[in-house]
Image (cartoon, rainbow, N blue to C red; front, side):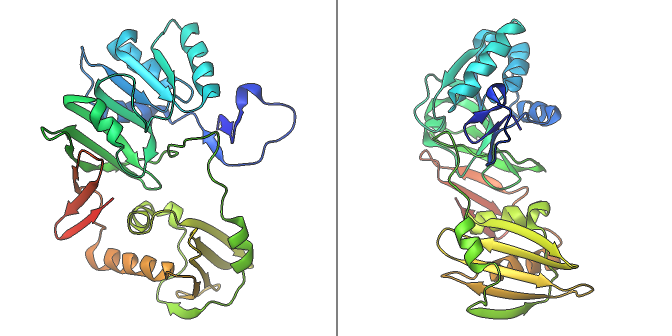
Length: 308
């Protein structure tokens, strides 16, 4: 992690900082994989979304030349630090400080994003040249989306079989606060509905297929887990007030589930897990992606379809 909230490591003081990570140094092999999926060629003009430490920009400059690379990040701390590092190794791409989901400063043959988006911003499609390609991940999933621009101003592509997860785009110095107040309220609360799930508690954040499917069907769910005297507990929280708590006792194979609020989040998780058991996989990986000019994205595979 290179930044927590608005506090950048380069300006770190002697006291610890508590908060959500807002920037990190991405696994180098993953940066290479994302750029490889972009199919960079000599003569291409690349937009690198999510400057971060500047590492991806440095690799892109080595591949395409400095003048062919523009890198953008919402955070001036990050762009200024990265620009300084890049200059120190003799690299001078164009470094822009702005929200990457807004109107972009130029047109590009390739857009490769090291941050995730809930759906493709319309500004990316407007800035992508005919025949151009974009590569990104879907926010709060492990899904990599690659797509090539189509004649109607949209794009067509697929969800790759590889997986990756990045921090999501943000418009300010920090992400919205986590749902701590809701968590404290329902942590041990009796649910409006109480039932038994046939499955044991799952650490959803480590089960990427289930996590990705849940996010596609119910964006914005916050997951928490804990273990107390061998009892495993998971919580699902949403800003609309929906919540679920599941507990698996030591040695048990089932879970006791409490749910409340307007939606039954754990029922959705169980539906996804049943689909996984019955079909051996979930349909998002390998799905085709049809992207309209306004960024509306429809995923489809077999008889499954979903619109972001």
